[in-house]
Image (cartoon, rainbow, N blue to C red; front, side):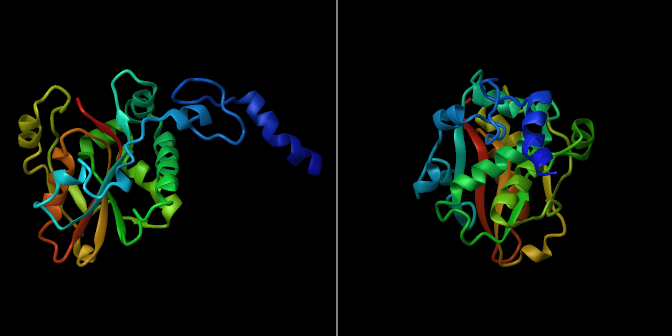
Length: 233
């Protein structure tokens, strides 16, 4: 039976080859979702090493804020933008999980997750989640949880109404578009806790700010923020 185990993985790789979601090249057996070469070249923000980084400044004075970072810089048309398109629009929810796990594994070398109690993903409206079949931010969060052991609470916030795409809106219009979109639900266990709000891409902070606004009345709550990517568009 040992020879079966020895050849099972190479046989699976031969019959069902896996490809890098950034460059499209075939993955080696020890690679997951993204090849080592693309992972090495990823344009990381490194904001988790920077206490007063541009992302955390978006939340200063608004909330009891801990930390904020994004894994990498998002540029339209880049191979790294393609990875997000795959799990956001093409049904690749397991890719969101795996990238979330890899991202969190890198951040574990710092103190980013040190005192965080719960992970809270940005929710989709129920109609959008039914259409897509899943919430990509939830699957990113599950990947983070796999690497960190921190519990995911997915029903602390609900999205009360669908919103139009933010893509072509100005910063002011994005914030206006998110007013009153989220509502706290089942948030009692967040009292006195440090929560990590997770989303896929941050552009103006409008979505994450609206989520934190929905929870800011919870007594002694503290917020940190993590997105897979940071866009300037």
